[in-house]
Picture 1 (cartoon, rainbow, N blue to C red):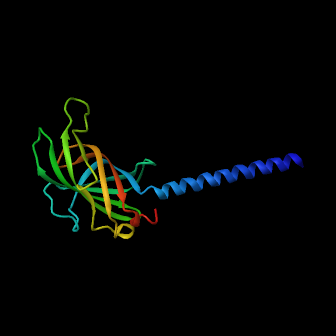
Picture 2 (picture 1 turned 45 degrees about the horizontal axis):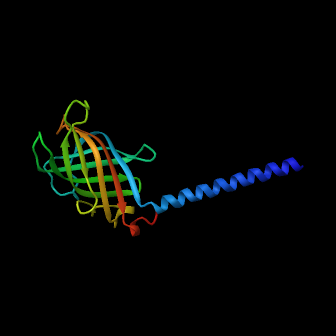
Picture 3 (picture 1 turned 60 degrees about the vertical axis):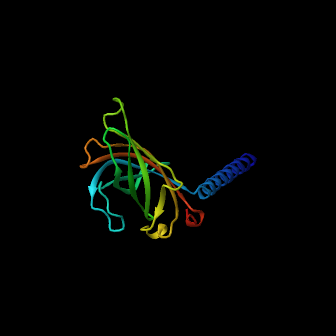
Amino acid sequence: MRKTGRSLWRVGTLAGVLLLLAGSAVEARRADPDIIVILRGTGTPVPTPSYVSPNNGGCFKTDLYDARANRVIGTGIDCLNIVDSSPAAEFSVDRTTIFNFPQGRLVARGLTTVVPIFGDSSPVYTHVVGDVDDQTSNIESGGTRRFRRATGNVRLSGIVGMGDYPNTVEFNCIFVIDLDDSDDSDN
């Protein structure tokens, strides 16, 4: 009997510790307002959505991954408006990215710097891309459901393959979406 009592006590204590740890992980997730996703794969041309400003570079749809779990959670559409271009030098793109999450659509717009990768470092990727989240990349109207009234900023860092542009674009881009606190109540 004594041995059984100790075993039950140990199992109960272990279960209690696991519940506390699980609760702490949930609280940490709620306290982190960032959503981190990756647009990865071959982007194929799609029509420009009605809620996106006209663009001269086309829109490309690819898979949207949860960066923490590394699994597909939706789709992303990147619409490119080439501001100034020079094939051999860096150029700017006024980018509108549509994130189609299970919880709704989120739309972000940013001024992205695009720099060629020099040398023979990658057979697929040709450019490094990025923008920062202060004044150059913001969440726009056009969101749905959970993101209908979302505000905040988006940061982008990635690489793209423009070797077959405008037919396809290869994406491997990390987006850090920083929702304002009032918009992240059900995270």
